[in-house]
Every structure is written in structure tokens, then in C-alpha cells.
Length: 154
Image 1 (spheres, one colour):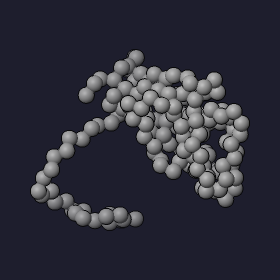
Image 2 (cartoon, one colour):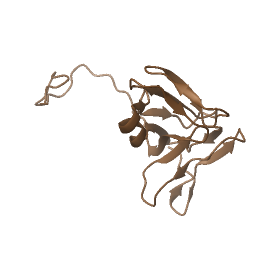
Image 3 (cartoon, helix red, strand yellow):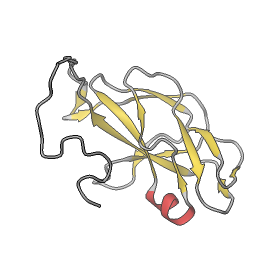
């Protein structure tokens, strides 16, 4: 696997602003795991209860091979307003070069206004491993065996 470009031991994430409305991703505290993503929209967007909207962020990026970007809900929006992502966490692959967009869903009973420049999600850069597939006739036994959802307790 190709080694990721790094500066000072950190992964180098190359960003391209494709909209003048873009607020580039940024960590909000010294030890934050995720960078906040902001809505690159000209006017407020009303998200009705149950509605999903694909919100542009106004930039594209190059993630080094061997990494992905995981897009996750912001905890404040989720806990206060019921705003989440329908596919959380969403994955952005290292070979994607299109605009970063966030699918927001309103899980509350009230309409929610997404304002221009509002921080709407967070993005975590994570290492990924690619599996090598090997087809076998028998798998090793485990204590869990065929137990599915909830089989190990609540």
C-alpha cells in the first residue's frame, strides 16, 4: 500500500475550493477527532421533518491512498434538533474528487433551517485496510457461532 503523504507526521489532506461560499474544514479544538464541515449555500435551506437534503460544502479533496474520510453527524445538531445523516458514518473514498456534500436528515417533528456557513457535520480522516479475499470450505468455530443481532446481550 502506498505511504500517505505527511507533513510533520500528519496525513496531508489536499483541498480545492470550488465555491466562494466554501468554509474549509477545520478542527474546533486542539484534540478534536473530526473537522467541522459547513454548508456552502447562498440562502437558508428549510429541512422539513423526515426530509433528506444533500447539502454542498463547496470543496473537493484528495485523500491519500490507505485513508478515508468518515462523515458523521454533529452531536449538538443531533441531540438538540434531531439533525443527522441517513448513512452515518458516510465514507468518502481516497479516489473521489467530486464536491463534498452532506446528506442531512431531519428526524425531529419540527422544520429546521440550515443557514449559509452553518457547521452541519464532522469529518474524520481514518486509516483503512483492504482485505484479501480467500474462499474456504470451513470457518473456525467461535463461542458466538451463528448468533446474530443481540445474541451477546443487550
